[in-house]
Length: 113
Length: 117
Image (cartoon, rainbow over all chains, first blue to last red; front, side, top):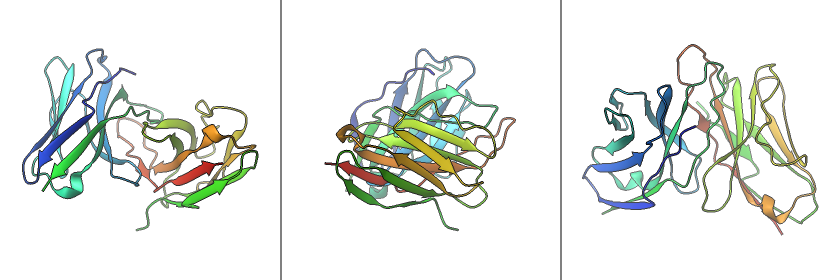
């Protein structure tokens, strides 16, 4: 699985868009980008994933550059409940159902009131 | 409906003792994972169960670690002769099992915080 690089921490004002970058310059053609987050003292929570097209769901948007070497997770209107550690993961999608995950240390996002 | 539950939420034990950690997955989720998260670090995969298939044990750090799953429900992670380096939060996750392109989102429990003195 390709290695990812994320900033250690970021702050964002409440109500503003939070933009979390992730570099994955060694990504392969069949590797997806996944985002999970972990709120303090809870288990991780899936946010979104994508291959090459931009994706949007009720939680966030995922923007992947054309060369796929980096991506940005966007939380459009950050709230205090979005304070968490955000993990960017790059891996091949499994055709056999085993989607075991390995997280790095992620980005600690703090939403400022 | 109910999410993934784990018990106990906290466990303090003495070095050398055995511990059992329990996971109740979401009903209908045939895939189950165990992970470990040391303080300030990311997630380490331990073991994966899917139906009656042989489990993927590739992440177990030593033979002191083992896990079982009863059918498609409860799983137990056992650590024998615990060591201080086993101190961590142990997380369980479950998911549906769909092949052929669907992403099987993992739903995590709150974890069991294990402290080995």
